[in-house]
Image (spheres, rainbow, N blue to C red):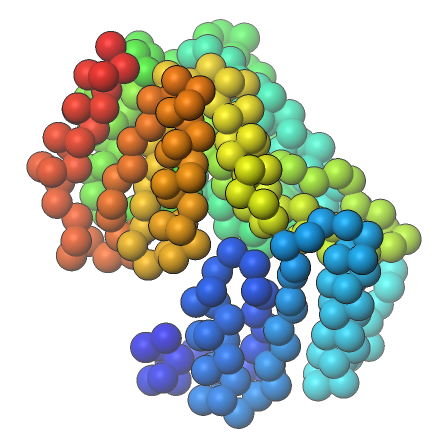
Length: 297
């Protein structure tokens, strides 16, 4: 928001936001449209997941696309859009293979590395680069699993990671992985929850992916998916990184914690900031991690 106010970004032709998950995104982009005096498109994604909801979102996506065409003077190339959908499906196929391979014990991949792939899941699908990355990753993990390669050495604990990671320089993962030998076996952000998209119905397909997002809709559906991931990846416990700036993340915290506790799955929430190291206190966080891992036995 500060960068928007100070006009640190290049002049945009439009600002686009979506209502699901991130409340701040809608507000920041609405303000950006006023500061930069450009059109603002808001995609409203309802909590319902039926055909009516999908049609509602698909219509908005199509209207936005035509609006962007008018603003930029560039017509939509339906053939290129279909190609992007095909590339998205290819990346999805390899990403599913990667996720399958990561179920192996010991974990063949560092969670600290896997958490860095959030940007590909969020922005990369539809590009050739995403296909290449996931194809290469699948080949590498197949070799590691066959050799029982342990990237952190002897694995003592397996964890499911919820939410994002700290994006500033710190020793957080060095302590977790190298010193405590705790593998982040999987992260909710890398969960592939959607079916193949249809190149013949691109707007409807993308709308279905948005509506069926595992974090959209009833919280019970969300907790069921997370518990299933915990079982699938044979984790000993769940680490929830509670980024202070995310109201959605904090709003779900108690419900998710209770759901895991009912299933007898140990759960810890670490309050921190993903963006700023000013609120990162290494000694306190290490103590929280130690207490949690001791509880796992």
